[in-house]
Length: 284
Image (cartoon, rainbow, N blue to C red):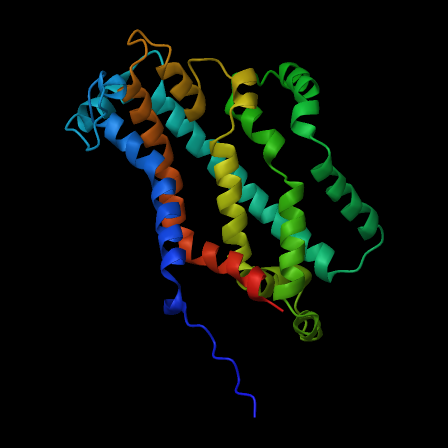
């Protein structure tokens, strides 16, 4: 009688697999570690041969210099990016979950045409094609060099709507929606009390991706904002153009400060983000 094949346990990984994983982790961490090393040393550390491999003791001074630099406006950039990224993330998550629920579980005339329109917005690079019309619109509205010019064009995201539609189809049974409707629940109450808790991992993934995208946005803020009112990416660019010349320690310090909010967001929602990503991989 043929014996069933023994399932491989997680700790049965071969030495080659473990070595490959360790190498991949080290290569992934190295740029972040090197940034910390340079940010904690003086101006000559980045060009020194042999290069320093351990962090120095100037991190606090470099942080103070970067935040107090009047030409780059790094502090204003951090605050502006937090406002822009948080506002856009809340808007994208709310609209995407609401529209995703409508496309996934509600039946209404024109839903197919609207869904195709949403998909078309994902296939056409509107951000690149629409730069000139958007800028003209902002000039007409008098919003140049204001945060609403950076926020308004990104409040709705076609990818977010499609993602939440697909996630709602898998996570929310149609029978549950019909049962709630038979009990007298309104459409918005079904969305608020049933759909939102069920799609929480998908919301975490969408929120992280949206926050990161807007935090790292460079082209559109460069066009509509002035140097005295930057986002964090423009402020870091300003650090390389200060009177310090190519002061890599201060540039790397600004870059290190810019990733702190992203790390905090990932720490806060990491479990749900990983769960949301893995759920799509193992669901049959």
